[in-house]
Image (cartoon, rainbow, N blue to C red; front, side):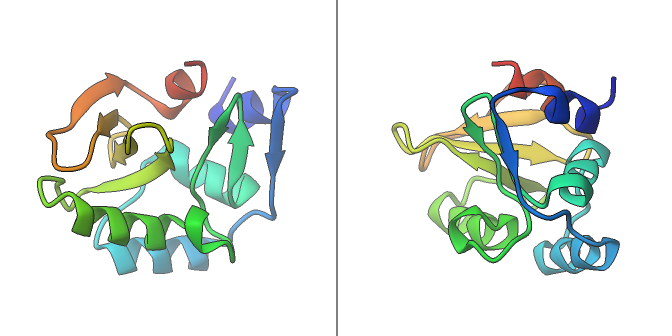
Length: 128
């Protein structure tokens, strides 16, 4: 089962309208990176989504969930974060931010702290 099927099958899920390929490319350009395949698939299918208690960033009009806005803000808040990472979730717990890289690996970081790997994929992360 791919990530889109997995998220769509979860009872505790809500989403918005999916993003276009053009919107995804514009967001990648704005951040100077490429999204992982699983995150891009989610953006196309859902725009942004809340699933299993995770409020994932995405592409939509809501600034506090917009991946570009949130990533730019959090990069300023934690200068130790590499430019090849983007925010997939602000947990609102102790300032913990969840990041993903182009290969799909998921990391967490507290403000001003180094990142640590927590999962190999978005699919694994939403099961936490």
